[in-house]
Image 1 (spheres, rainbow, N blue to C red):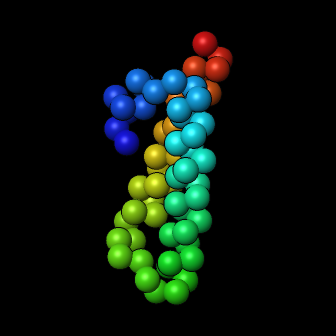
Image 2: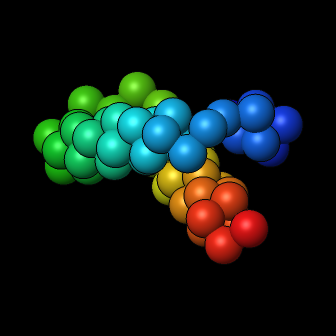
Amino acid sequence: MKKKEIKKLSKDEMVKNIEKLKKDLFNFRFQKISSQVTNPAKISETKKTIARLKTSLRGKINA
């Protein structure tokens, strides 16, 4: 997700996206162990997206 897309989301949507991405990351880790990862860069991109969502969420809660 891009920063512009993240800014448009509501708090509830951010929380749902974080939960979904955490599940995806969990699955990517298992795929990595079993050597079934099709795109290893997706793991780091997912981590970065989670961090972006958490940062934006914290900013909205404190504002």
